[in-house]
Image 1 (tube, rainbow, N blue to C red):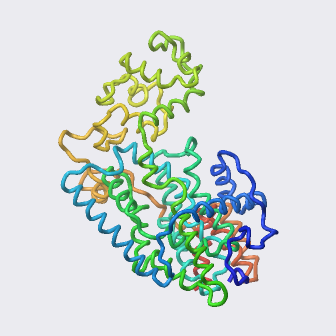
Image 2: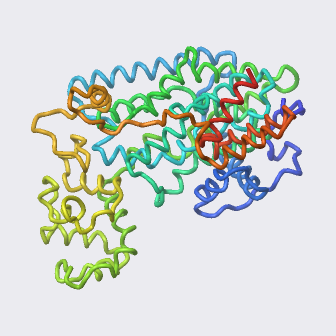
Image 3: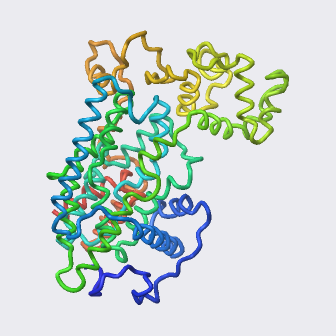
Length: 496
């Protein structure tokens, strides 16, 4: 075990006697984003580690004031898990019945809304599994077997087409959802907590185990998200993969329960350990949750935010002949906070025709089409938001900004149906954008980290040193790279 003490008080608690632990320091207003960047870039320095400890303690104090839905005894976890899974299944069945009866989508108004969601949750998805990383160096302890197996599966067991972070990175790339500038600081909270747990596992072992327990249960929102993304023609594989691996029979949910039972202290303060597990599980709900992110989408506000980001680069780039409502475009863009009035003026002048097909708006023709003067100014995501904003309620059909309009009365094909058609050349349908994964061996990729890792492994005759090299390459910042994928496969080989 990591800790020899027989009492499982939280490190840093007033009665814990940890005088040497770093003192909590005040963090800036955008603390989550700044700390996220420092923790996601590799092993943290002393200052970043201290700040991550302070962040964790503050989150745990907040969690302690909330009620936990875990049972009083860890030995009742199996029944708790199955009840939770059954509730999600029953609610999902009700959702499907309602949709079949004609109910609209519950989560996503249109394609822009779905892409907004994918972008907003990216800070969490891009560190998927990070909370377990700190246990990887202790793989010889059989009590951690289920936890380490879960981490290795989060890494896709070294396969590019199964590595969770790599899948999400490619999903972002395909829909032009990078960069992530402009996201609220609160959207980084959950990612910071996962990284902080991963880099501080020695001090927070019970919380890591508890977080894993809470996070790996199958939630209803995961099922609905996958269903509606598919319906809108967006690849749901990242989400459906989690539906399968988190199952309550042989998946991560079951392993999470077993990990609690395996690691409960046989000597000392097992009740204190369980209390900390409970508090750790509550961190899985910290930050802005999935349904909160979805409910927070306002397409008018998002359009205004997009134009505001372009304002600084756009002002001064237009000729004086470009005039709207008697004022030059440069003049409009020179005024901070003037974007809402500028958009209203574009509408009034007829440049934008809201609640009509986009081809009827002169402004849209500047963005897309032959000789579009503003081609490339907006990212694919930004174009989709503008596209759906112009179309209004009609955008509920999920039309992509760069695809032909759907025929009247026709239901748009789902992502999976389009994928099936794309596999049959005789059907005359081109591939709509499947998640492509290189079939060539990642071991041969011309990657400097991979080459360096192989060289260091070859030069090392010490098995423990080799293990440490592999563990470093399997860290949250590297495991999705060719070096990390190679290291994951080699780690599996040497650990059996």
